[in-house]
Structure formats: structure tokens, C-alpha cells
Amino acid sequence: PLKQYMLFKEFEEKVEKREVDDLPDKFSDNKHAQAYYGILKMYVGENLASIDEALSERWVGLSFSVDEIITNAIAEYSINPQNIETEIRKKLLPMIFGECKKVGSGMDQAKAMIERIVQIVRVGLNNS
Image 1: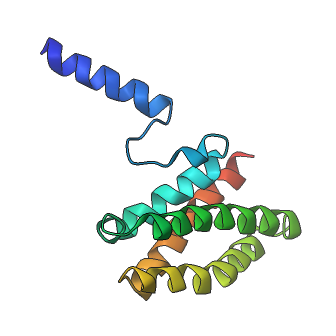
Image 2: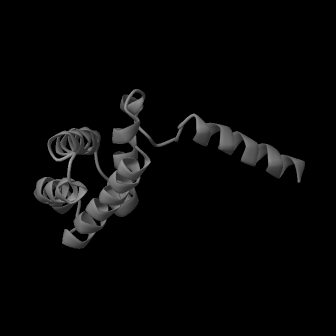
């Protein structure tokens, strides 16, 4: 029991510090992009495990692009949250679908990723 407790304690500390073993170091100062990368990886994780370094870098870049699109949508449509969500979906779908195709995923995964991203944005807007 003590060994299990120590393992869980260590895991809890890593989670609080956002230290995930397979997370690139480039996200250290951008927690939003880190969260979006986690979503992308969650939906195409098995396909991302077998890709090369260059393609992995593209998914990291995609995460930062998603963050930029969301920031711009919130700034432009801050009066109407529905317009924020519409803009996010409109901008992200072609971009994410294109990247999904490159790793053997499709429209279903792209739409699921976008819905999850929109849920995170909703929570953020409701908490602000």
C-alpha cells in the first residue's frame, strides 16, 4: 500500500506541474496550446505514435495555431458566444481535417476534436 501511495503521489505531483512524459517541451509557457495538443493526441494518439519527428512538429504547430484562432475568435466575437463557437468551427475544421488525413484519421476524429475544443472554450468563457 505504501508503494502504491508513493506512485500515486508522484503521479499527482507530475500532473499538477503538467509534466507529461510524451508531451513536447515547447508548451512550457502556453498552457492553452498544451491542452489543445492533448485533445489532438487523445483522438489520433494511436496514429501519432507511429509518425516521424517532422510530422510531430506539425501537430505541435497545429496546437499553437488552434490557440491563435481561438484567441482571435474570442477577441472578435466577444459579445456573442455563439458567434465565437461558429468562427472556431469554421476556421478549425479544414485545418484539423487536413492534418488528420495525413495520419490516417478522418472527418469523425476532426469533428470530435473540434467539439472538445469548443467545450473547453465554453468552460473558459463561463468562468471569466
